[in-house]
Length: 250
Ligand code: 13P
Image (cartoon, rainbow, N blue to C red; front, side, top):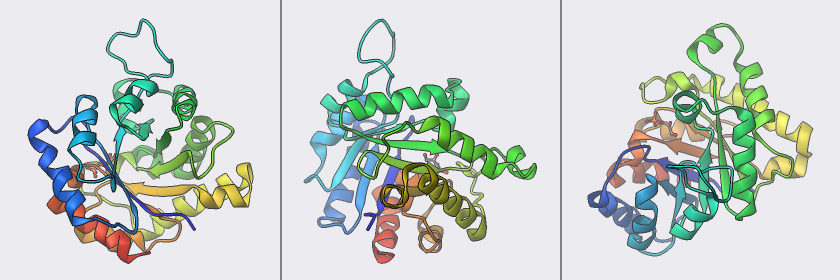
């Protein structure tokens, strides 16, 4: 069975003073029934990995370059974030696709770079409000899934996060039926491409305005294997109940 995953994306938030949150989270979940991952800004990866109380909270990066090294000012490689203590990397977040013009083809190259370091790739996809209103949601996420996910994806190296762009940071959440429709579709697409056994091992996260008050109902939706949480992952007091809700769904 897929082990559920509660992942937090701190985005460009947090300082050394925030590391008490990871300690509090570690102490609240000493033997979690689910995987827990926090992805801080790059300079905090090493301090966060060092500040944890035990290794029950995994630390991840929010992006990396597709190349191993070279003249790429401001970028970091998968090997570098691994050395800093990351075991996972978020790739293709809609904010990277929008702010930095990242294409699914680039994301696919980054996934390969992450796999080469034996890190877990958390591949993000999701439709804009206009795309949803135009009835293009499944076409858009299907295309992003196909183009961002290299051959060789499996449950050990890949997590897919469905994050509707219009639900990120807005307080808006799709209906449970809408989430189920997309997650069932993603599972079917993975099955068609990688076969049932492999597809059934790949975790599908929902992301976009997840908080303690809506987590349990979202975790009850078919093919939702956890969440990728932004704002509500910054404080242990907000994230811990989400982890607990996920554990209750196991
Ligand atoms: P929010 O939970 O703040 O809506 O952000 C979701 C997200 O983008 C996580 O990657």
